[in-house]
Amino acid sequence: MAESLVDSSSSKRQVIPLLVLSVSMVSSASILILLSSSHPFVIVFWRTFYGAIFMGSIGIVNGDFKRITRSVIKANWHWLVAIGVTLSLHFCTWFQSLTMTTVAASVVLVDSSPIFTAVLSTLFLGESLRRRSWIGILIALIGAVFLAWGDFGGSGLIALSGDLLALAGAVFLALYFIGGRRFAKELPITVYTTAIYFIAAITTAPICIAFNLNLVVFEPREVAIFIALAIFPTVLGHSVNNYLLTKVPAYVVSSAVLGEPIGAALLAAIIFFQIPSLTTVIGFIVILSGIALVLADIAVRERRNHSTLDDTNGS
Image (tube, rainbow, N blue to C red; front, side, top):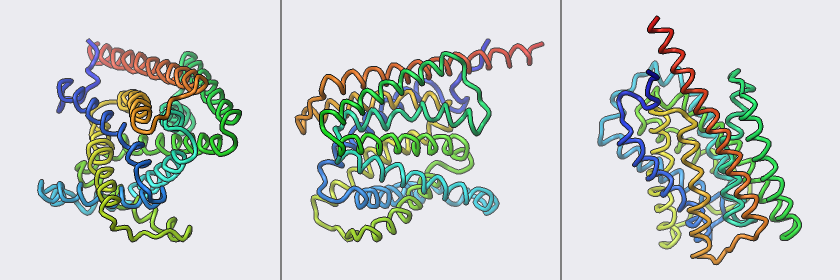
């Protein structure tokens, strides 16, 4: 019998509600970002800074910081810095893209990260993909090109630039997920996310300074939006995803984010009256179909690997 893909310390009854929670919370991010009048980079700084404060507070109350050892920090600190910088770059590129193209286009492109996860795993981890996965990647890329071409023809160079920034955000998100899958298990999740969010914040600060942006923002409405971003899509979204990465394979978490473009597009249509064009909808469907094919193929392969391992152990 094949081994369960869910970690023995968890259960499907826990994992599924957490996946639903994380997707619903992350879907609110693009809307909150567009409701803010601050520059995207400033929003990144405050979202990650407040996120670090909230996760750090939870960690202190739980006594998680007392459980870590100096040797663990010494062995992993450089990886934590790299992952934190990657998160900052993901947020900066994606937040900026939201101001240049539609929510539907930006979110579906940034959530194409499973495609880049598959490609990067092949290049750097030696995890070869099967033909079906490569077909899925090709389908998703065709959808991305179709969507970007439609934006360039309809909205011009600005929208196309926003699409490209969203794709860059997808690459950084893929690296972030790979890093989380590898290193989140080494530390209590509150400690891990506190470190990652704080590093992302201090990475974003000099970027803001370089662009001559004012980081001192205490307008009540803006602070409320920053705190909402820290609580909902960050603490209840990204942090839950990081926790799930310690319990289930990365493709399970990646597949869950496929629900974000749908939720974000619906919210954008209701709040901002952003009705996706036919070109965007077609590209949207093609990209999601390609990603779903890749994730389904990876899931089948992993189950077969577990089954083979069980047969070997049983013989």
